[in-house]
Amino acid sequence: MTQSSPDPAPRRRNSAAPPRETVLAAAMAAIAEHGLDKLTMAGLGRTVGMSSGHLLYYFRSKDELLLQTLEWSEEQLGMERRSALARQVPVRARLDAFVDLYVPSGPRDPHWSLWLELWNRAHDVGDDARGRLLDIELSWHRDLVALLVEGASRGELRAVDADRFAVRIRALLDGFSTHVAMGLPGSDRAQVLAHVGEFLDESLL
Image 1 (cartoon, rainbow, N blue to C red):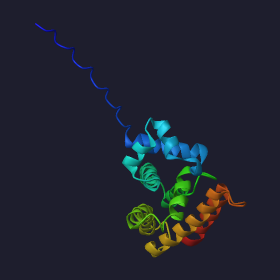
Image 2: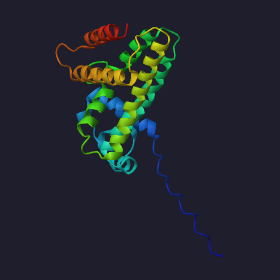
Image 3: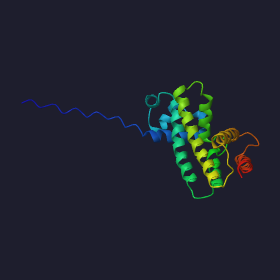
Image 4: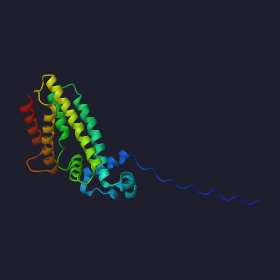
């Protein structure tokens, strides 16, 4: 009787890819620590234990990675925003909370770095990506409109065309926030919050 040959050694399984949220959190952390210009697929891959080719398989391009990282960051910020706006405090105080969450923490704020980069690439990223960026913008807009309507209905704020006024407030916030994120002289966060607060008081109280 011939001796049977030993069973072949089991193949080594490829390690499972990390969860999507792990990759996106690592991308945001890398942007916060080193800046967006130094984020590479190869570097991010080393951080999460994936090859750059593996990352490209899941995200297709660096632009898509950046967009998904922004969307993930906005999901976290959106939960924080909804919690702040649901507090049982005067509407004017909740407007301040909205503005505080909108304005970047300072120069090279990672969330705003992503926004600025994707705005800069808006002509090249395609209609789908522009639509996804618009969806993010509209989520802020809807919350702000609802807050203005509530304030007027409670008699806490002056009645205004909430939709039109929200467009103007967000334009003001975008302009100031861009200056803060770029670190322009005279545009530190405290000064911006004071300017916006004065505008809201003058316009709504």
